[in-house]
Image (cartoon, rainbow, N blue to C red; front, side):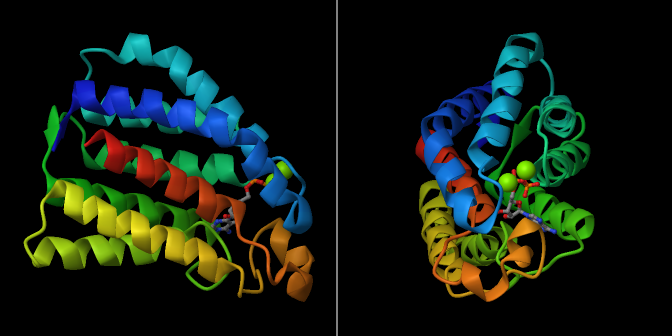
Length: 207
Ligand code: ADP
Ligand code: MG
Ligand code: MG
């Protein structure tokens, strides 16, 4: 599905996408947070982007671990350690690999999702990025079992991720800053679920 070169290209496109969505992601964080999600993510992926040329020729594990460490050290806020651990653990899961097939890719996403749950002590229905991550992974597994190709599987994942984002509007947050506003957060979509869906969409479009 993707070799090291493709992974670098996808990361480059993710950095562009996050920069393009920076203001919107920040605006989403206003009513239920502290108005910085887009700023945090753009800072982190801006640093990732600077490191990409040094990662050419490296294996996928090294590339993803470097992304994780960069996010942990440059993104202030909850999303830094959460996405950071997701990429770090994903990198450890594919140490030494020069290529990932579709089912390996899904197991890497599974590892990333588990890393967020563990680091955030969180699960679904808490109005977080997990409300996009978990249902999209389920949809991708289902599509894969039905015999879908990479594009079909990823498209099913993207659709489910955005449906998950919509669903966060109905939820009362029990983790992170959004939990401070409680019921007043109803009607507002989660910024982290949104940034995750943006990233998955980039992967789909690049495959
Ligand atoms: P901060 O809230 O520290 O300002 P960001 O605004 O960058 O950090 O990120 C907020 C996002 O992080 C939320 O929208 C949510 O998706 C995610 N998040 C926060 N806490 C958790 C958690 N415990 N588990 C999973 N995701 C979380
Ligand atoms: Mg914030
Ligand atoms: Mg913050």
